[in-house]
Amino acid sequence: MVTTSTSAPWQEISLIELSEDTEAAFMTVIASVPVGRKFTVNDVRRRLDAAEVPAGQRGGLFNRAIAAGLILPVKVSAWGVDYDVRVPSTGETAHAATVRVYRRIGVEP
Image 1 (cartoon, rainbow, N blue to C red):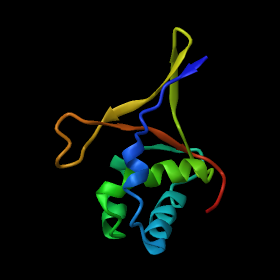
Image 2: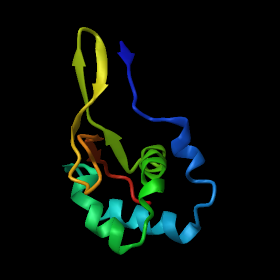
Image 3: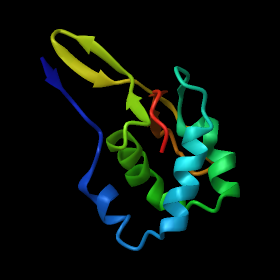
Image 4: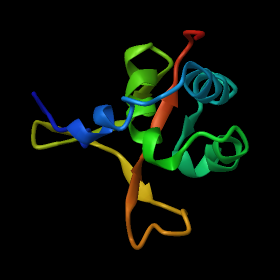
């Protein structure tokens, strides 16, 4: 089965100047999502803003949360290919952009 991903190399580059406090704040917000719940950045945007997590670093931080075992991207399969489930972004500057849907899994940061 083929899996497609929307991760981009620039997401990791965006983390070069990431502080430990910012990463910890992001992981705390993600850990606050109940285990088993599906969610998007739309659902946690206000909390990330309040925690002062820069919008430009969030894509890379979601990838780190996946690597840490906190979340998994929700997938849909069609004709033997897995695709990320995406929904419209509600961000102020979204301009018809979409965001990934994640499922919170049971690992703590």
